[in-house]
Length: 327
Image 1: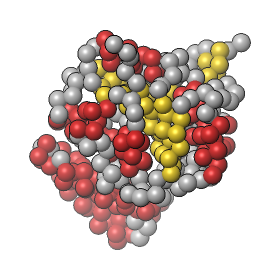
Image 2 (image 1 turned 90 degrees about the horizontal axis):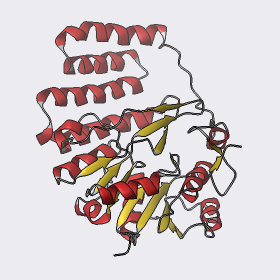
Image 3 (image 1 turned 30 degrees about the vertical axis):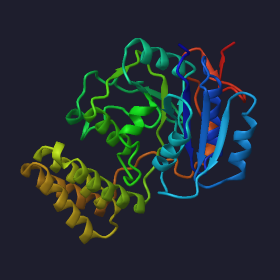
C-alpha cells in the first residue's frame, strides 16, 4: 500500500515577504509534501512569480481566488477542494513549520490510528520565541467551545475526507474560525493525537488593532456564540458576551459610548466586579491607557528580517531553504 499523499494549502493576502519565509519552511521539510497550493485572494504578480520560482523544489500551484468571502478561510477551503492528496495541512502565510512537521505529523497520523494530528505551538515575535502549552488529549467539543486550546490554521494535519465532511472552515465567521472547526470535528467524533514537541511557529503581530477590525471581532464573537449556543452554559454565554462588549469598548473613542459598553461588559461578568470595571474603563479614557510596545509601523519585510535565530541549532538560512544547520 503506497503512502498517503499530503497536500499543503497556503492562503495569502498581500504579504509576499512573509509568504516567502513560509514557503522556505516547506522547502526545508525532511519529508516533502506531495503538493503545495498557494491561494492568493488579491492576484499579486509578485506572489505568482514567487510561487513559480519554487517549482524546482516542490510540486506547487498558484491559484488566484476571485470570488467568495474575503477571508483566509475561503482560500483554505478552495485549496482543499482542489487538493489531490488524501491528507491536508494548512500553513498561514505569516507562520512557519520546523523541518520535521510533515514527517512527524504523518508518522503520528499513521501510527496512532487517528484522523487528526495537532502540533503544540511556539509563539513567535520579532524578538523572541515562547513555547505555548501542549494541547491536552481527549478533549470534547464542550471543552474547547469557549477557550481555544491552541488549534490554528497552521498546526494540524487531517485526513481530507474528514475535513470535507464537516464543511471545512466557516467562511462567514470573521473570528474564531479555527476554534469553530475544532468544535465541529470533535462533535463529529474525529479522533486526534498531539505531537510530542512543537512543530509550528505562530507569529504574533504586536500592536493595537484597527477600530473597524475591533468592531468586526465583536460581531464575529456574537455570531460564533449564536452558532454554538446549544453547547454553551449560561456562564460561557456571559463570558463571550463580555469579550464582545470589551471589543466594542476598545473601539469607542468618545466617553459616553465607552461608559455604555463598559456597563454592558460589566453586566456580563460577576456583579461584584461591575463597579471596579467601570471605574477602570473611565479612568483609562481620562488618564490614558498604559503604554505598551508596538511595531505597528513595521512592514512585513522589516519584520521578516528581524526574526531571531531559533530552535536550538537551527538558524535562518538563505533561499530556497529557511533552515540550515548552524556552523
